[in-house]
Length: 636
Image (cartoon, rainbow, N blue to C red; front, side):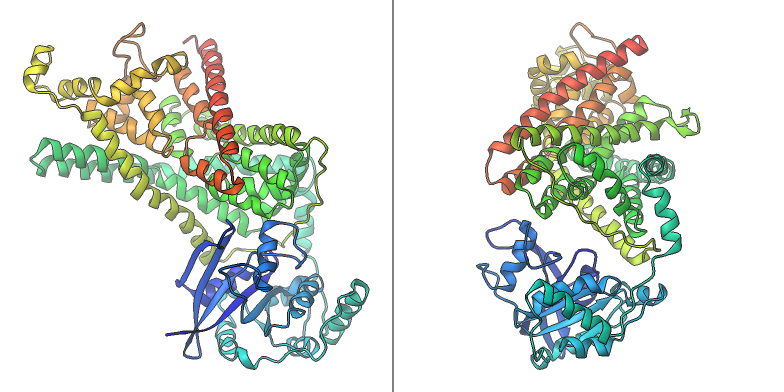
């Protein structure tokens, strides 16, 4: 089926453009970057009238007078100035019916491009629910172009939109183009609204009452912190039984391998490296899925935009604006989309400061590490007042990351833009609404799928490499007996092999760096392996623990002792050491993909090198401080 046309979706952020795009393209969408730039590109195929129409979702913009890289790309595509991205044949302008007055500015600018245009009205159901009114046919006559009403997340009106797309060549055009003079444009917009019988939507009384509290400078912050506390308590409490089930499943699979694979080498490779290494990370999928589900729910009900408004005051103290909070919030899933989201910032120096701060936000890759270490540090039944101790520590780590990100952004902004002033920040406050279950589940699955994809690629490869490093070089039975090892004892053999492996050599080589933090060579190997992906720290310790006690790896980690040196025989993972590890992972930039994205976004290796350097040094110093303080408090 040949493509009949290239049709671009244009609209402001939060106008429902992406819902319309998803409804039109279904599962036939793909992502990439525009040629020569790093702004994301979303393209899909819509079957209409027996032909395949190429649909492109352009970056959201409030007007065609760009102030950010994303908005510049939209204008360049519409004007045909971007190499490798041909000018669209036709345009769909997605307009939120509840903000029609403001949206008419963008509609006028699009109509000035003289391309076949159709206006797609979203949230008309909400307009009616809030006592608003609009005559769609009259609006079409007033604008001189087709106008259709759709409800994207419920797929209402999508069939009619497909039919209209099929006949894009016959779309009518305005007899007179909208004026370009601002004063005349306001009069034109008013005349269109009057002709269409438009009555704005009333503000929800419930929304007004809630916002009086949630946007209050004092009560709003109290509620924000309470929501976050409940958030992390829920992640721990609800995920625990699910995590136990996943752990049991992988334990059963490891047992199957041990029972049915005769070759010790192959059995170890499959059981310890693949199932043990990857399974040790997948055990934390319930927490990660819950994290993304709760974030999607908070966004869907409209609370996250309120949180961004509250945080705008905090961001201003760091010399940034509220849009930077949105980028940093994206980093809770992964620093990479957070860094990419800085493209919406109009100031290049704001983008740089936010990029330098984004890796400090607690991403999902840290979650398995935190859950493992907190589980070793605190008993699940421990409570501090009405809250579980584990959830409070997790909340504290997220808070530490957020505060540190603000400090880092402030420092970078001071160094790079001493006389800069924050630009005005505009953010819509949508009414509180029940989110569509399908949209919430899709958002959750999209983020969880990215984590699972990492498990199936980076973590599998790293786990295999780690297993080889922990089991090579090979040692004969005679060599082990000469060293006094009981070769009939599998645990003793495993301990000897690991202690004389290539990994042990590397771990001991870097010991002078990490000795002050209380790490032994096995922990050192885990920290080094985490440079590929933080989750591999869990896989590394999982393989070490499984080799020492396959039946009870968690117990093996708790009982792990220093094999040699001045601390020989002492427990490794004490409270001070675990505190140092938690803080080290809170600060260290241990994701080479993030380094690569900073390089791509800044166009130089200078800033990723600075980010890696300052975060690694900060991680070591803060970990040493955490160990010292914890040792003083616990007497350890």
